[in-house]
Image (cartoon, rainbow, N blue to C red):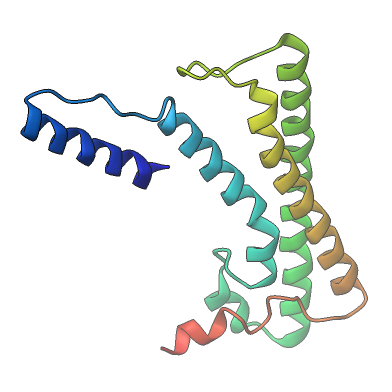
Length: 157
């Protein structure tokens, strides 16, 4: 959307240079929609990023722990992350329901019901919570975390 708006701005400037007057090409509320898409893509990618070891972690500390202590630390940290994610999920779902109930709309030129643009954020948090619960289940059964070893190779470069 931003690229399309930049192209339209360029076409408008060219038209202004040729004819002395711009033609006023614009995508209504493009900045709002770009923000909505950014939030959706960021939150929907959280669970995948977790599994791929892309979240910021204290790998330098965890790597130096003995195997048993590392496993206990992974369980503790993942439980804390699960609690935080579940808390955020519950309150994001409540926000979506409240926005729907009160008919909240975005303030841009194109007024969009906020519950529609909040839904991908709630969904992304719910998927992250599910991924963390699955991670805890695996860790408690003695498995290594799904992200084990994926971020550690960056430390050697």
